[in-house]
Image 1 (cartoon, rainbow, N blue to C red):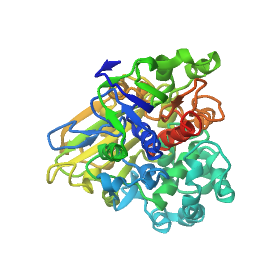
Image 2: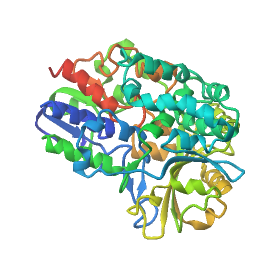
Image 3: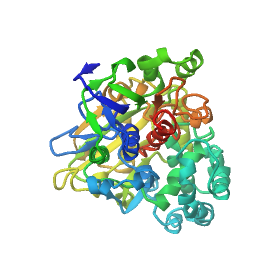
Length: 479
């Protein structure tokens, strides 16, 4: 064990303090088990950290930025996180998607108001998305978890009929105009899959539906506030957290009945592979990671000067143009290329949160997809895409901070090759990650569990992977 020594005897040890590791620890502590969290870095949070990356007084999110699934999480919603400092900020609109004609499609909380930005597709959008938005709270438990019998099968079936398709296939079957297709493609691109590959449509449906049902909020003061609130609540339950403790082998953890790892499969192999069956080791070795990201944080002398005024109402802006353009870019990444016009995911929290920057100044968080492990600097291409829809953007840049896949993995070891989702989210790995098992959170070794986003339901700050891993441990080792 590198760093400080942790002694004591616990019911459970959690390795890693990302949102899933902290969620697992909280659920164990809520059930009366003694638990300690060991974090290799000096700051807790994993992918939910914030820091002054550019200039003093400018607070940037190091990893995740916008958290629709965190706000809507079936687990987080049961916790008193607001009492521990977490305050959610809801932008005027969850999402905007600009086009070259100076207009934008806008994902509003209202399905009807969203349709008004989609031209001739308003009716089609309302007929398709309306029922899904109404049913969202009935089906979210099934969407954010492992395969199991649904509580509301009819509502889930309506969602599933579209979700199993490719984003292009579903969008072209539903819509005629470029605005509706582009809006859907931008949401589906969060899958990191080509638009022609199923189940990319599922991501477009989930993010669009949760936008209507719950919004796309973010924490006031930075994503770090999510981790801070979870740690504060955990400590109120008697849990312990130690930073600067890097676990190189399972033999190094304190005496315990169970260990839950908020790490990815290759890391799990390094730490405790000798305790697994050969079949399980092979499954972990063959686990596939997805594309990486190239991220740029900007400090600005003013807000982004979007041509489309409606973009100034949104916390998130998808910068990528039409379905065809997004499709070309994502297909290039899947082939190992770097698109000249990448799809850019952008967050402008400081428009709605004055704690992020000095008065009159602003922050921007942006990234694009790149092949796993890429070393290509995408800064200029990201800036060009933003400038395309916001002429004068470059003139407002005071400072910037860039992070490629290697940088992201250095600051968070779970981001293998820049993969922020804990592994490729295609059909093969959607519900069977990291291996085909009845309980994907358990391992063949007694008392050892995986609780990271490399288990269902995968990436995103929702804590459900950690929650289900904790429930698995409580049902077996910690009964």
